Structures are given as C-alpha cells and as structure tokens.
Length: 255
Image 1 (cartoon, rainbow, N blue to C red):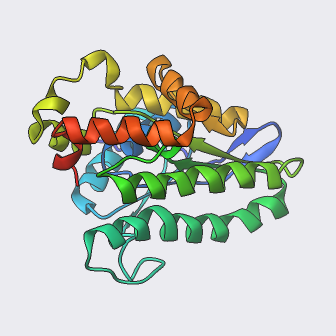
Image 2 (tube, rainbow, N blue to C red; image 1 turned 180 degrees about the vertical axis):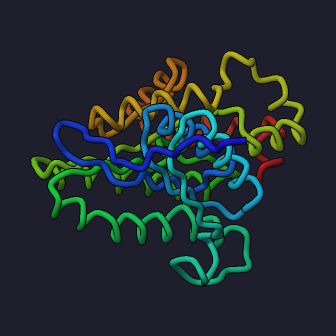
C-alpha cells in the first residue's frame, strides 16, 4: 500500500508562521481530543504522554485521517527525567505535574514566542480552580494555580502577539471521571447532561485559544457554577463544598 504523503509545511495565522503544536497528556481524554482538533485544522503536532502505545495509535490515526506530521515524546512529566524532581507520594506527584511541570514548560516556551511576536499557550485548569474542594484539596489548589498563572500571564503579554488561555472544564467523560463513578454511587447518579464530551471541550478550547481569550469554561452549567463561586463569599463557598463532601461518597472516593 502506498503511504499518503504527510504535509510538512507550516500553517500561517494572521501572517505568522505557526510552528509545531505541543500537547502534553495527549494519550487520552481532553489531550487526545485537542490533538484531533488541531490536526483537523492542519497543524503539525508534537504529542507528549507517558503511554507510548496509545500515543503511537493516536499518531497513526491523525496521520491517516488528516495527513499531518506528528512527532511523539514518550515521557512522564512528573518524573525526574522530565523537567523536575522525583516524588513517590501521590499528592506531591499531582502538584509536581500540575504546577511544577506546567510552570517549567510555560517558562521555557514563552520567551521564544515573545521574540517572534506570535504564539498561543493553552493551560488546562478546571472548574475546581474557582473554589476550594474538600477531599480534593490538592487537586483544586493546583488547578487554581494554573488559572491564576494563566490569567496573570495573559495580562503581562498584552500587545506582544502572544496569548495565554486557561481551559476550565467541569466534569468530562474521561478515564478519571469514569473511575470516580465506578467507586461512587453519588457520582454515578450525576445526570449525563452535566458531563461534557472531551471532543466538545476540545473544540471550545481551540476556538478560545485562536481568539486569544484568557479563560474558557465550556458548558452553560459550568459557567453558572464558575460565576456563582466568584460572587459568593468564600466562607459560604467553603460551607457548601464541605457539606457536599460530608453528605456524599463522591469526593471521598476520589481522594
């Protein structure tokens, strides 16, 4: 069988040549769907994740379906051989990945973008970034960092041609949410209308990124939740989220 010629020439946006799109956590969930969205628009990709078999399968799919050039980096960014220190504890590893690795990569890539006068950065935060979440304290706090960092950088970078966007999805049909549902009767009863499809989240993220928006919260229910948390006194937010944690098994199952 003759192999389809892969398109290697870069895209141009507003007259600027677009280099490779680097997507971390690309082997599944929102990361994989982002890769599909970018590939559908003809972008050349560099995909990073720790599961090489899934990365290879995704690369083959994207090359076959969209005729784009895909490079793979099999790497666990929470490990010392990634940009940072080793941690064997789950919570420290979570912070290592969501805070340290994200900060290191952002710091590494931004100067070149500013020098060129063009660039886009999409950082994946969470709806949990808008409030403390008892029993998911470290996760919510790490995502709050991502949101705050991204918003601050978006202001610092005004008039440079570079933008930073924070993606804040709510419950999304990923492996993590499936595990929570499997171990929690309360989570399993969440209406499907409140659980976003990864593909829909990725499309919303791509559009916001290309438009240079600072924050994107996909889905009306999630937008209402984010708005509520920003106008509600913090003591009341703590009380409500704490009450939810005490009354259900949902958060306990995800600790």
